[in-house]
Amino acid sequence: MKRTASILALLLVAAPLLACSFCGDSFARRQPLRERYAEAKLVLAGQLKNAVANPDGTGTTDFHISKVLKGDANGITKLVVPRYLPVVADTPPDFVFFCSIVEGRIEPQHGVPGTAALAEYLAAMAKADGATARLAYAFTRLDSTDSTVASEAFLEFARASDAELAAATTAFDRKKLRAWIADPKTPIERLGVYGLLLGLCGSADDARELLRLLRADSADERTAANLGGLLGGAILLAPSEGWKTATDLLADPKRNFTDKLNAISTVRFFQAARPKESRDRILACYAVVIANGDLADLAIDDLRRWKWWDLTATILAQAGKPTHKAPAVARGILRYALQCPDDAAKAYLAEIRRNDPALVKKVEDSLKLYEKK
Image (cartoon, rainbow, N blue to C red; front, side):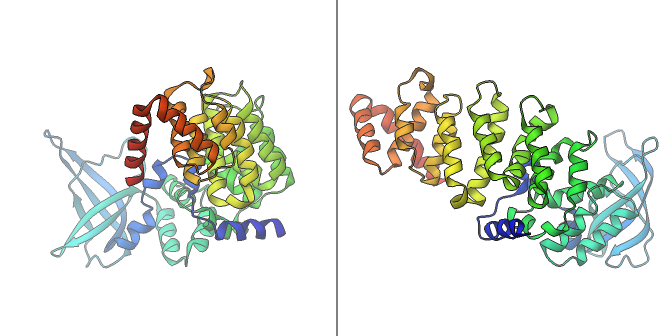
């Protein structure tokens, strides 16, 4: 309990970072149906029938209203939707439309497949007071047999900030999370977020399982694709072992490029969520990344943006090495030197100005453009 309270206190005062860091950017761009529900003048549940396709590519579909979920349909029981929405094979005809009212006419703006379970979900989410209540309810619907409900419930977690997740920790069931992570039928894009959630509510046994999954000889394709979130969960549960796993992975020449990118996403997550508490661990991870030419530019640019100048000597020592001659790395070192206040960086910059003033000018100009954005 003390560990959970400590994590909560740290995350609540940190800059917000979304859980979709571990499940793909597409989730950050999706609008939850609860928001569409709040915005819509009228929300209707019913069945699609009599879909007709026209030769010009347009079409119509009858929508028979079975229930008004929000608003007043003024007794209307059927709409003709100006789209071809066929019910193929044994696909359920149940649908929910979010509508506006224009000059007294009902105009469907957005529609999704949805059984009575979706109507129940939308009503419950509309009543939920705040992010903690929404996440607590959404957790109970992550394994809904209604695919729309299950997808919407996960979207709430994908779009939640780290602080919001931490505040809702007591509503998570670690046994369910363990089972979902182990289940090969769990959608692959969910595993990283489930790993992070397990890190917030799990036990020492869960930490050991996450660490086992992260070992090179244990990682399968699904684990590898979600390494960032699973590693984040392991670090929350067992900081010493978790950070050592991250550092070892980043230093291992046998681990592939994607694994290391995912581990870097975890490092960035903790720098945003727990910068003071994680600083030494993050610097240890980035020291080994900087020594490896493949990803050195990412670590160097991160440190420059964060204004963490602790590894200046390590960074400058890589300049000119055969492993670090790639233009991206060389320019990354120069960008760092241009903004670093340390005397060693100033001396390095002066030398480059003497030898290649055109390169310095080009990098200075690119930094100005970057900072304007």
